[in-house]
Amino acid sequence: MSNSPRSSARRSRLAGTALVIASILAAAGCSNLGVKPWERDLLADPDMQLTVSAVDAGLDDHIYFSKEASSGGRGFGGGGCGCN
Amino acid sequence: MQLNTHGKPVGRALAAATCALLGVQATDTLAKGEPGEWDVETALLVYAESDSRVSAAEPVVSATRNFDGERQLNLKLVADTLTGASPSGATPSDLPQTFTSPSGSGSYDIAAGEAPLDDTFKDTRVALSASWTAPLNRDYTYRVGGYASREYDYLSTAVTGSLSRHLNNKNTTLTGGLSLGVDVVDPVGSAPIGLSRMALRDGKTDAQFNQEFAATRDSNDNKTLVDALFGVTQVINRQTLMQFNYGISYSSGYLTDPYKLLSVIDDASGINYGGNLIETDGNPVYLYENRPDTRMKHALYWQTKYMLGNGDVVDGSYRFMLDDWGINSHTLDLKYRLRMANSYLEPHFRYYLQSEADFYKRYLTATEYNNGAPTLTEASADYRLGELTGLTFGAKWGYRFDEDRELAIRAEYMIQSNDGDEGFGKLTNQDLYPDTDAMWVQLSYSF
Image (cartoon, rainbow over all chains, first blue to last red; front, side, top):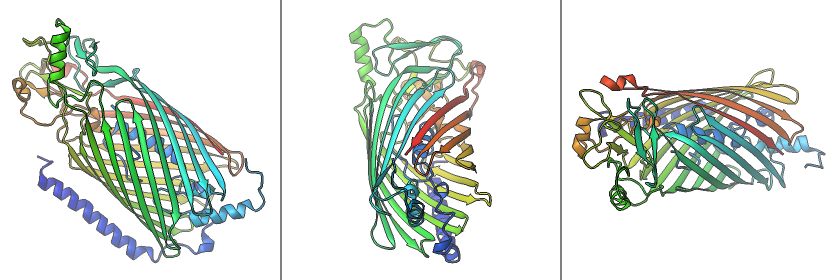
């Protein structure tokens, strides 16, 4: 059965490996990336924020949390609900 | 209203530049943050599903007080009123079906061939959250927050904390966060015992029914949630910003949906033991669902923002989630912000694909029901745990009166479709996986 302890452990290992790879890539690659402080004009634009509207994001997260089996990723789930 | 506009563009640009990369999630209103002012975002969302299912109205007020360039307090209030019908999990039948309402005080009938929807839902939810973000020193920023929401049958609380470390001239931000939550589940009519059989009032005295109903009830229950998040935010170049997160979430306690049912189907003929078979005690055969009491989820999330040469902004993200219930999912989200002089138009597309939980069963067979001693310990027919595809198309239009005030309208349309075991015999005449269409429209004003 696919939820056997072995399968769960494999999934956890997979996620762990992905995390390690991502961290290594981030650590190795990030030092060569980026901009000088005076080159932040475009990045400082409100439309370039990762979450432009927290209200939109919160409302959508709540809808998808209520209608799907997945949540989170961008941040914490944002609170539970009955959502029957 | 902002009266003093002298020097504002410079102050604003400085504040925004300083704050642009603080934290995984806290970057939303930082760019607006003028020291000593409140930034307020208000919205009203109206949500409706096809076939008179759930509809909701949801007002939101979010206010952020900026104390200086980097310290800020956010308070958010959300309310929603929800009415309508929700799929109970039972299958349609070639005969009419009668179900006991969750409270036990009434019942509802479903016509032959119709999807069993429980139309007794009506709820109001109020959610409050607060967070405080501030620098510890030049290299570190912390954020602490709290959350509480209350609805008729559910109370949710959580505290969160995160710490961000800035590196490489703030081109790289590493963030670690933790959230601890306790939810109190207090279902109407108390929580049913998992896989117990639904009692029906028809032809019984109140005392008889009450005794039978009480025998299917358990005490109310709680669940606890622990979430941890690790994130890297990286400036790639002058036009590109990227984020990579790994989130792990562990919940334990009462994770079952107290209002969801399972039908039992005859192995040979495909006849529904709900509408067709009333056993000697006068009750049809519907079982209350039962889920595992723990769940571990992992989510990998990647997001990129890119500003084109013409000033338009592309926002793309992908999330992969898997859990020990056997569910994995892929979520792709794309937005393109077309920027004009004082306004913008942002088309949106989202694709979601989910595999089914190991214990997802569209129905139980009579063999699995085993005359009341089920051969399974966990089963749920909740379509949200089944194989699911979701497509969302939307657009947002916004108008900026000045640097502070913005009016926006947003509309989204979602189509969810399920797939799975189509049944056998007579059951194949029934539509076991109807689509769910939902639409929401949101009007926002920020100042």
